[in-house]
Each structure stands twice: as C-alpha cells, then as structure tokens.
Image (tube, rainbow, N blue to C red; front, side, top):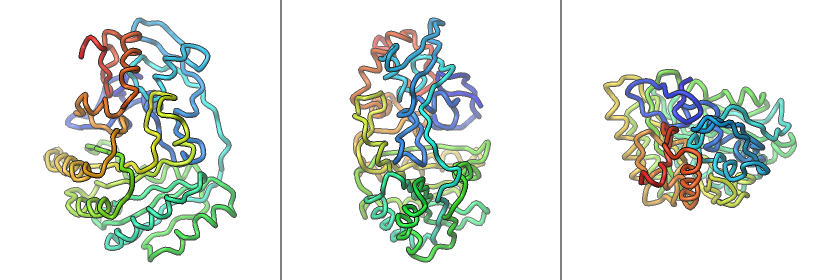
Length: 345
C-alpha cells in the first residue's frame, strides 16, 4: 500500500481524494491516532504507544519514548508523518477475546430518526466496555436499500454485556440483527466489504457536542440526497479511556465528550467525481452550525487547506511546528496533513 504520510511512499490512485487514514502505511495511521472499537476501555492506539524508532530527515535513527527524546515522542502521538519515517513501534498490549459480544444491527431508513435518538440515549450512558457507532448506509448487495445501522462491541464479561445490550436487543424492528458472540478479529473485519479496493473516495468530518434533533434532521436530509449507493454517514462516540488524557498530554488534542461525524462519499466512476465531492462538502457545510472547534486529521482529504490542519491540532499546533523546525526544517516529509516549518508560513 502506498503511503501518503512520512512513513513511506507516496503512491495513490489517480483522481482520488483519499483521507489520510486510508492511503498511508500503518505508521502514519497510528501516529495520527487510530480509533478502535474498544476505545472506551483502552483509549486510542496512540494512547498505548510505549516507544517508536524513527529515521529523521537528516538520516539519523532515533528512539522516542517518555524517557528518551520525550518531546518528539509527544509529537508523534498525533502529529502524523511530519517528523520522520517510523521503522518500529512498541505498544502496551491488552488481553481481549478471543470472543466478544458485538456485530451489526440495522433498521429500515424510515426508522432512522428513532434509531439515532436511541443511539444518543444509549451512548450517553455507555460503560467503558461498550463502544457503539451509528450509520446511515446502504446494503452491500447493490440494491440501493438504505439502512440506519449500529455497529456494537462489548469487550467485558458476558453477564455485563447482556445487561448493557438489553436495550439494544429489544429496540425497534430491525431488518438485520447480527449482534451476538463472535471473534474479536471477525468484528474488526466486518466493515471491510464496505470499502472495496479502487473505489473513489472523498471524506469530510467534524466534531459535534451533542447529537441533537437538529443534527439528526440534517443527517437524514443529506443522506436522502446522497448520489451514490456506496456512500454513508458514520457517527462515532469517543468516551471512557479515550477522553481521560489532557489535550496537551500528546499531540492529539481532542479529548472532549461528544461525537465525531464522518461523511464518506464513495463511488466507482470518475465521471461522477464532481457530483460526489459536492455532496460531501454540502453535508459538511450543513453540519457546520452544530460543530465544535477541531478536526480529525485521519478523516481529512488531501485538498484540506492549512486552516483545516491547524484546526486538527488546535492548541498544540505551534508546539508541533517547533518540532518540525527541529527535525524537518526543509519539509521533506510533506505528503501528509502537513505542518510546514515556521519559515514557510
């Protein structure tokens, strides 16, 4: 896989606007904060990083950890591929599975208002063991059927899982209910068919403080205008361990409660580029009145202006720029959500 970030390579399919999280090596993905379906328990992937080995722009190999090159270690935990090429990682591991309670549950699109309201209530009181994402999406059979769905993962004890998921299992009239015991690896692979190879993608995202009825109305109206049967809207709920670090503990600053809305425009015919990109941008604009400050760099397209990059790093941007001046003053590592050296701005 070609890498868009500093980790390796620059290859990508022509005419695509891939967000950084899909066309990067694992190194840049991790260093920009990988979300996961157990973030309530253990936080984000960068929260478990112990050390990283890197090759910097001047060809030096450095180790970064809390004890060694600690400022660089602070920066790579969220700063992406801006400071060098990561050649190895050391992580704290957590025992999980092999079986968990999780899966997909989906409802007809005409129930989407009730589904999203239910999701709001479920996540407002979610224990750390439970992570749930919601989506307005299409079936994968090509029929074009629209669905309101939730992806669920409970990584705690079986008795606690049954208690936490009882409201979900008794809500509404789903057309699909695959929530139950399954392997953790199978759950991680469940959405893979929704992102076929060589599909064209354009992504936008934002943070919202609450999933209000007004936000739900915007999501439903914009999804109804979606021009592609491959596109979807995803709502994620960071909580628990993911919100406990301070915004300045590492480069990734977004630790406030609320939701992340991901707008995925996805299509197959390059002749439809303009139509689908316009839909993603219009959906983002419609949500702007409800957003809070900030942006998630892994969900930013490659046409994002510097102002968007600054939003992604918020109050940590200037500190990151000082690191850029120190480790990459010539901006060798620039095929990313780039933090330009201070002399360039």
